[in-house]
Image (cartoon, rainbow, N blue to C red; front, side, top):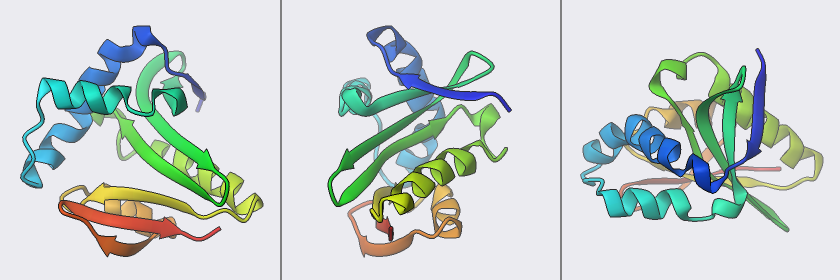
Length: 143
């Protein structure tokens, strides 16, 4: 599979807004959060400096936001268009992040909505629930 990551550009924002709605709206609603256009744009633009567009054969299919701080990496967002979910792409992307983090002995943390089935993927990859949040869980994978 020909997957690439490239830094997100301002011209990617419309795609990223569409992606967020397609990938997250159902999980947000199930968690009791109604996504608004303003909230979606705020989330897309948050930490934009660490946002990477996931491309498959040159087609934009997802987003990976990873903040690398000394002592801890934070997986902020992993989103794929629904037609590309459940094909091993998320497992591959997160697996690469974990491999790099382990090489440096650095733990990786993330937050996941309780209604998001991705929690099972994270557990399979070695993340453990550290605490509960208002709408989900804080998880950690040790380095």
